[in-house]
Image (cartoon, rainbow, N blue to C red; front, side):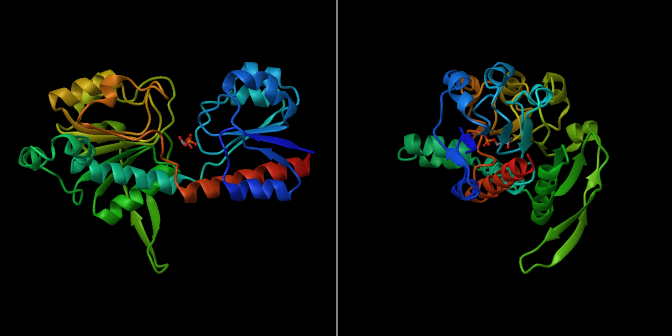
Length: 317
Ligand SMILES: O=C(O)[C@H](O)COP(=O)(O)O
């Protein structure tokens, strides 16, 4: 019987599909340091971003045939090495785009009305300094009519653009690769509307956008270091629900303190799962613990897609 270890969990429907196909699915979370021994008895492992599947683990498990990533980013997997060793590596790139895009807007709407800081301070100061807090949060901003720069115009960037257009924002989109700026927005009731974003350069986005959201993988250095942050429109808002490291965190703290950057909304961090204190405690940062894809709907789509990929793999083998 094919044995699958879903080390970071899998949606119950995905699990059920695998079991109906005749596979044994273990959803126990085996600690990273025990995997080199315990994973040896499995044919496949599925992970999210927590479990690392590095060269040494791959070498320790010669029976392993498939690595499945329930999600998009594969930076926790030595993908090339695994493929060189004859393993198949799958991810589910489309299933979570909408959930990530919705978190971008949850973060943006929240940040322009100081929700994160207000929720930190109200339980402590709300009873005695209500009117002081009311004043502190008096300069909210509307999103309608503002310019959103989207850096990385793949599946997630496009979903972000659709919501932004619905909100009435101007969208500047940049990607390393050429893309079609036209998008179809499906409205409630099923009507489809064709819209278009403005193709932009990274430089134009840095210098002119009111808000910037990042949707690229982390390659080797921060896209937004001190130099780029200094060139942004004063009072820009930044959102990173992509990968830690894309914004230089120390430069960001400086830019927030000087007022160059008005706020940042971060779902991903340099040192996950232990982000630095300066980031965790900054009043102008809205924080979430890497939950962009963490909705019931996205996880169900991911589980089903991953299960079908694994079933197809072993059917063909
Ligand atoms: O790359 C991804 O799909 C996201 O960062 C989600 O990661 P997660 O599966 O750990 O939530």
